[in-house]
Length: 190
Image 1 (tube, rainbow, N blue to C red):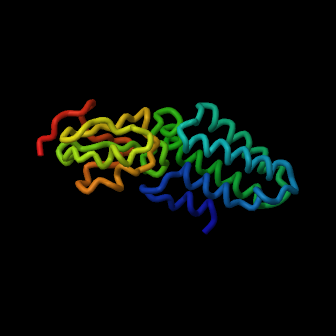
Image 2: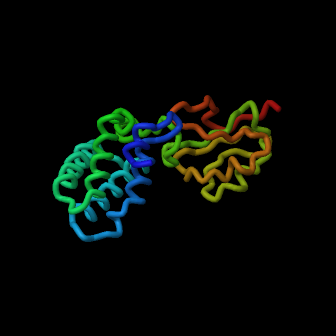
Image 3: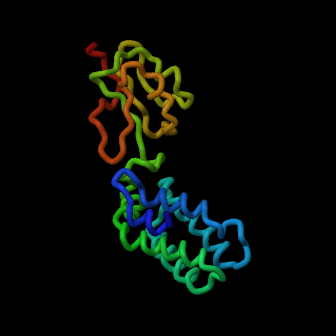
């Protein structure tokens, strides 16, 4: 399946920015080096898409990619550079709102981009056992025994270690819609 076909058949649980990043990383132009616009173009696309998927996207990124792809289409020495440029332009045209959500609202509606995900501890499930606190290397989980623990989002690195050790399934991963959780540790009701 070509990149353009993958873009046209994108499912709701897939992220266009992530899909494009993976396609760009797998593109032959990355290792070719025969033409500047293919090699450098693909390198710049990869860096820009990587920034977008890692919450570092800027408002100028879409116009930069459109301009770069326009040059790649006319200056690449082979069809591979032209193909990926066409695919990126089609993706921007079709899914501009998704890109703008990544860049402006810092959100990934598909829940694929790891940097956009946050972990939360549900108060009605937490028993205050402390396993998540012990597992967190960043000390991002706040609380004490028999208190509902809270994850400090500024300290959390989204590694998922807390989620993997919680036997109560109290730790959940959330995308754009966040669960209602206490802001500070409170006594457990269980």
